[in-house]
Image (tube, rainbow, N blue to C red; front, side, top):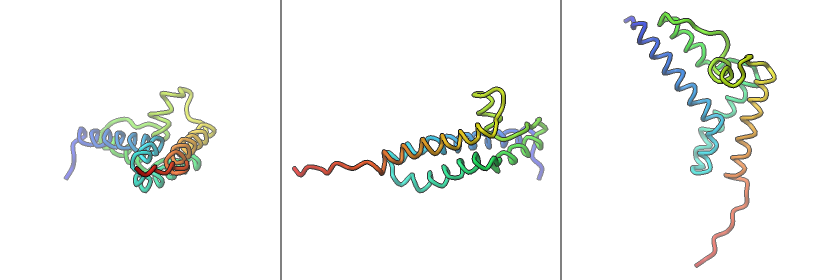
Length: 130
């Protein structure tokens, strides 16, 4: 069964939305832990993966999937990774450098360390009995 080019383009756009949501979860998902501590079980591995991708200079596997779907949908692809194409291009028009990737990785770690410290690290004030 062959899908239409429009279907492949829609699938590629869906991958972009999921990928963007994942990036937001990596950077800001620790905030959920402030409300629901169990969210840490999902967030910590995702945050670690996001930081490793940046520190390693790797491309997330969702990026080649999006490229392939765009190719099957007869759309032009783009060079580089998701963060470089969609996020960094908006923030840093000159393009993604290795130093910027390391800074992004450090930012992810710093934000999440701060949030996890708020969630788990501060001393809890014992409840006063009534």
